[in-house]
Length: 168
Image 1 (cartoon, helix red, strand yellow):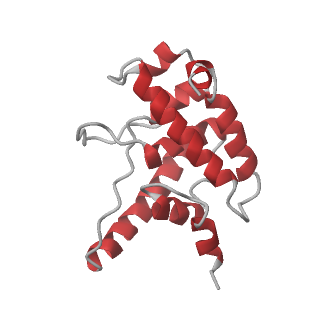
Image 2 (cartoon, one colour):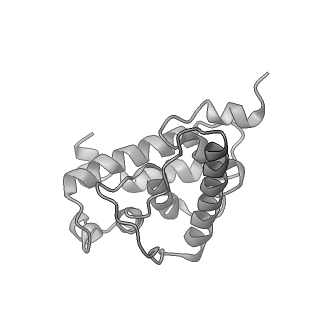
């Protein structure tokens, strides 16, 4: 018999699938709106081309800060367990695409969304498709908290537009 947490994990595919399932289980996605959810999802799929570790950026909203903190706590716990068991470590959540995705989800033109980044438009489109895939997976997880499925669907609608929709 597969426990409820395992049932949720069965619907999630990706490099950070266990981290996503743990974050879901601990409510990281519960208090963000659709645009914030799209931005938050980038931390779970995006990986910068080069190591750009440094000061954590200020995020667009308090609820996004709280949700990101919850994911980072789960990542820290998970990597501690992976280390103790000598397993490969789950990659750290990357916040490098949060602001561009948030701006895009809020309806900004692509050039404005990417302003201040070194990200090429084609790379942004590719990452956005991965965010859409994750949000679609989350929407199909059984027994989601109230409203989360709808926010996943709404987030997809917010970011599947313009060049992203055209390239699909």
